[in-house]
Image 1 (cartoon, rainbow, N blue to C red):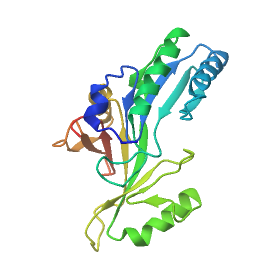
Image 2: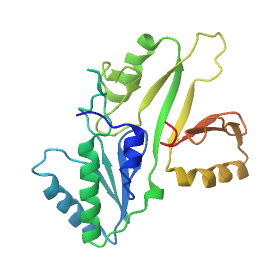
Image 3: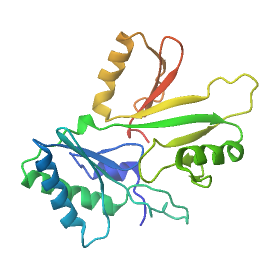
Image 4: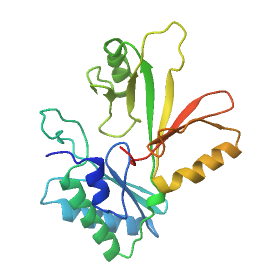
Length: 224
């Protein structure tokens, strides 16, 4: 199926869901583990006929759901990588309806996803190593990403850079957040001794640094 653009996902107006680095994410609040099990069971029944299942994680007081199509294809090309399709949008609406019928509310401000970025001038040299270390499969990287489909480890993406003798930076974190959360998160980081390194691409992303200069990008789906 064709992957949807960022704008198409915004236009879908999925109030319970937020698009992060990969997929649609939602958090539904549950009163007990039994409530969560009932919710997961109902979602499972809804997905049984369609063959497209979400990733669900139950925790203390919440059920996190992620929707992603592994067979998404970039429109007009033969290239594909995991992304959001209309199938995910339709299922997101159905899952929200199930949650509502069970009396569960959503907390979209609570979702987040962390990715790890690595600067490299030679992807062919380092890509297989990191794929092997993180997933056990040296071939488990596609274009610029190492992704573990089971979600055991965070995604690693390679940021292309010119070769340089003294690295300006190697690893950095990308923290994907709902847009409405970012201003308060920046304020908290600054109060904790951090600084803003770059915000010219905000709200798409804002670069912060800790007092020693270690960087993190706060990323959103806006202006992409």
